[in-house]
Every structure is written in C-alpha cells, then in structure tokens.
Length: 218
Length: 205
Image: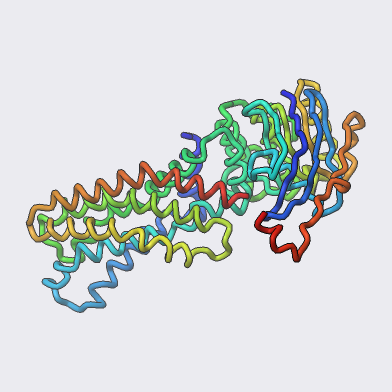
C-alpha cells in the first residue's frame, strides 16, 4: 500500500507526470479573472473566494483522467487487480497520491492568489481551511469518475461531464464558507458541512470505485 | 498448490468462448495452452486470474497462489528497471529482486529508465516480475513475444527452475519453448457453440 503511494508520487513528479500542471492552470485562470472583469477591486474582493474555488476545482479536474488511464494502457491495472492488494486500497492510494500532487499545491498557492483578488485580511484563513478540507473530496470523487471512464478512448470529456455535477455540493459549501469568512461572518456551519461531505466521500466512494473498476477490467 | 479446473465455461463480452475445460495442474508441472488466434486462450487465463467471472464450472486453487502476466508488462517508463521490480516485490510483500535481475540478465540494466529499454528487454523485465512475486502458479499469456532465441532460452530456464522448486505454470504460446516435460492442452476443440442468432426466447432464458 505504501509502495503503491510511493510509486504514484514518484510517477507524478517525474517527467510527464503532470505535477505542477494543475497548479499552473490554477495560477493562469485566477490571473485571467481580473483581466476579464476589469479593474474593480471591490468586485474582485467579492467574487474572489468563489473564483478561487472554481479555479481549484477546474485545476483538479484537469489531471483526473491520468489517475487510471496510464495504468490501464500499460497493463499495470490488470496486474494490480490480481495482486494481493485490495482494490479499495489501490483506489484510495491513487486518490491520496492525486490529492498530494494536485490538491495540496492548490491549497498552498491559494493565499498568494488571494492577494491578486484583493481579498480582505480575514478571508485568508477560511479560504485556506475550506480548500484544505474540500480538495480531498474533489480527488476522491474524481477517482470515482476516472474509474467509471477507464478504458474509454478520449474519456476526458465524459469524465468531466460525470464528475462536475458530483462536485456541486463541495463547491457550494466550500465557496459559501470562504465567502462568509471574507465578509467576516460566522462560517462554522458550511465548513462543517464541507468536512462532512469530504468524510462521507472518503469513507464510501473507494468501495464504489473499486467495484466499478472490477467491472471495467473484465 | 494444485490448480484444478472442472467443467469451466468462459465468456468474452457475454458470448461463450470455451466450454468444458478440464485440467489439473500439479506442483512441478507445466501445461502449454495451444489454439489458433481468437480461440480463447487469453480469456481462459484472465478468468483463472480472477479478472472476469466464469459462466460455469469450478476453479479450485489455494488462495493467493496465482500470478498473471498478460500481453502488457505493466512497466512504468519513467521508473528504472530496479524501481519497477522493487515496486512489484513490495506489492507482493517481498524485498529481494537480485535473483530476478540475474535470471533474466537485467542486472547491467538495473539503473536504466524502463522507457529506454528495447521491446525484448521490456519483456524480460515483465517476466522478471513473476520471480519477485514468489507466487507458485504462473499464468502466462504469450510470454515469448519479442524475445530473441537467447532470451527465450533464459525464460525456459526460469520456468524449469520454477518447476523444480515445486511451482507450476500455465503458458499460452504458439512457439516451441523447449519444455519437453510440459503437457499440452489444445483449446480449439473446446470452442463453445455460438447461441442461435434468432432464438429470441433463448436470450431471456
């Protein structure tokens, strides 16, 4: 299991692994927003938390199809399915590796980008907290979507269509908690809901992903 | 560590391919699967490996005894030869890869990125994976594809050493491996009859 995580992290950061790709995409999207909406600091501060959340979500989506596609192409997935590791463990480790290589850098970069969005000072802590609690759910739900579309040529678009609706609850509560934090209101309730969604996803979805993967490997 | 298959019926994409497959693979024995392309050798091996459910019949094997090697080797291009093998060794709860490297003459290549290997060298790496798993029953699908004569001999020697240690192997192949002691099973006569195309009620039976 540890070997699995280690291998996926090594693959992620080596050439062609796509580490930093999601992060660069996030930076560019968030940098483009002020160009799009024009030089209105007040407006930017108001839409900032939502835009940062949306950017993180899209950046996460970008690297989802790599989770299983490469292992499927070179036959590793067949071999992993016949290995003594439980399939649920394999998908959990895949999701964790995806979060470490994609979600965690986004969380780290978000406060810096908050400056670009002219966020008020009290907004930074809730923004980082919501991303830290919310991005694991994005990875786990995305792994489920990747398991559903494994083996489909050019399944990336289908994957996006399947996964984006599932991201809605995470986005609603994450962006709402960040917005309330920015407006210096209490944000405990949406934060708890977000944490609940993440815990539920981590607890349940690996079983669904593993079941779907077993069917797809037939 | 006997693999016993009784009246096995297998399907690919819902269509029966082989029916009435019976054989027993005892420790120290090898069985060569023969049959023309598309006759169901790969499907049989995948079913035995547990990747797809059989339509009927029984597969009796001790738990955690099988290891499957398919057409694809499961090699990560950006990892080195040693890293690839170490990963699989750890997945199967083992550590030592030196014996496997030596058996397939991969030791001089151990630090090369697997992506820079030739097709035959990759195949040797894929076969070396079998040795690091420590599993007794090998299910091999066309193991000698892209191997030269020398590497094929290495492979035959590895299989022979595995059999001598009480392991067994089920090998689908078209060429002569030089394993005189191996029995052969021709799957061509076991081909399942295709269902009648206009049997409307039969489809729902």
